[in-house]
Amino acid sequence: MTDDIRIETADGIGTVTLDRPKALNALTLPMIRAMAPALAAWEADPAIRAVIVKGAGERAFCAGGDVRAIWEAGRNGRDGSPDHPTRAFFREEYQLNRQIHRYSKPYVALLDGITMGGGVGLSVHGSHRIVTEKTMFAMPETAIGLFPDVGATWFLTRCPDGIGTYLALTGARLKGADVLAADTGAHFVPSAAIPALEAAIRAGTPVDDAVAAHRADPGPGTLAPHLDTIRRCFAHGTIEDILEALSRDGSDFARETRDGLLHRSPTSLRVVLEQMQRGRGLSIEDALVMEYRLVQACMDGHDFFEGIRAVLVDKDHAPKWQPASLDEVGPDLVARHFARPAEGDLSF
Image (tube, rainbow, N blue to C red):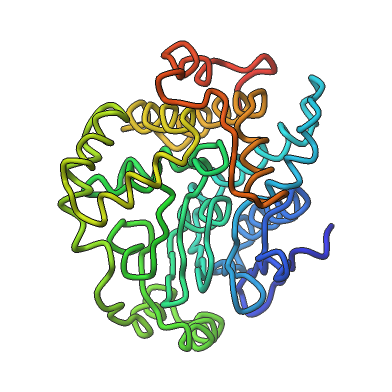
């Protein structure tokens, strides 16, 4: 057990509190290993009506997986052990994502703050995703030489209006109303009403009724004025065509989006677009199997470790990607990311 997560049962409700507020509740392997069996036990217990998952502190639900710990474990190479952190973390995280996706009881995730990467995986697969005005939602992996994982292949390919490909490539940050527009959050509840929502569920109100009673209008989002640009530009089948379409658009939004893409890992951009194209229509299981292949290829590569160095370790925000340009990222390199890893595929 770990002190970084609280597992509590009361009033017919199982509650998971991610309790690393100083680290924005970043997810660790011990936290995963505490959460998965608790969810299984609650699912089998007829006395448990629902599960609530939330983050401690005022700032975050969960800012993602503890990728710095993965960087520490893998930056000097790795052995072939299946228990190496670069394998065990992602394997068990993805298995937990699938467990949440298939969960048979109401699963209420309170996204009342920063929700990125691994935090999205703990929330978006649940039956009741609650966003607030404090929600900041993002899949920022291309900035660190990675790709949107935790089942993003499944949920981003189902976003309307090209939003999924836009989010996958750019790592754009969404607020509450935009999360609803992207169909990655199910309900908007004001942050101040979250305690009352929890209390109603604990008092025995059915989850759907409790959410309906506290739901509110999130107001206008920031994405709506740009949906035509997103839909038009991100429908293209190559990164070069997307960049060209953004150049032709001419708007400030398109220019800023294009500039942002040019700072991302070129390998990540090509791999992620291929991921979105291959991922359409996959089951959650097949999506996660593909993502495990991708992440193991990234662990054997350069850009993830360079991206973490630049963003989280040295914080110079000047990664030296290898290859350094899109022209140098050929189809063979992309294809290798989708190959079955030597230790075998993810299983459930």
